[in-house]
Image 1 (cartoon, one colour):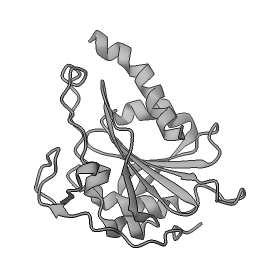
Image 2 (cartoon, one colour):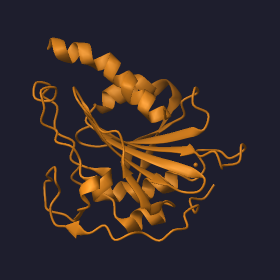
Image 3 (cartoon, one colour):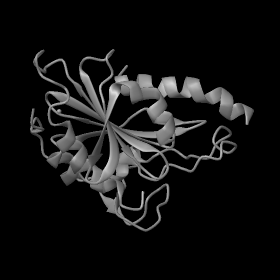
Length: 211
């Protein structure tokens, strides 16, 4: 289980009851991307039409269910699996052909997840509607406030997860987690935070200025 998945599950454990009651260079990639196909509208809706990937295996789940309807939380707009272009994934240092839908979480709060691979790192992107305040309450004691392309962010180093490094990017509905963790092939002395600000800076424009 990745550090980010532990964080999401911990957030869920904290928030379910109240809701119910009321860092080296990123050049490890080698393969060429596959043709994913694009369309002009997102499957979960946006403020304005934009190209999104159309591969049926990448589409996000519905955010309408018995858990989400009573929470009052806004829907997650930015879907990392269908909004991020192959070129952006490649420039961030990951193989676009490795793009895979992660374990989306659609419940009292929602996170849409996408995974990318390179030789030495795995990138997990989680776009959610847990609030920035909830994130700060969870990771504030082991995070550093930063900005990424002018967007408020946190550099997160969980002391219990030595081979992970994470940047959380604030959005209008919550935040996007850019989580990098080292693969078994990575040298033991490699710092997981090396190059992560470059990765986050490359990913951040895909979120969109209105999100």
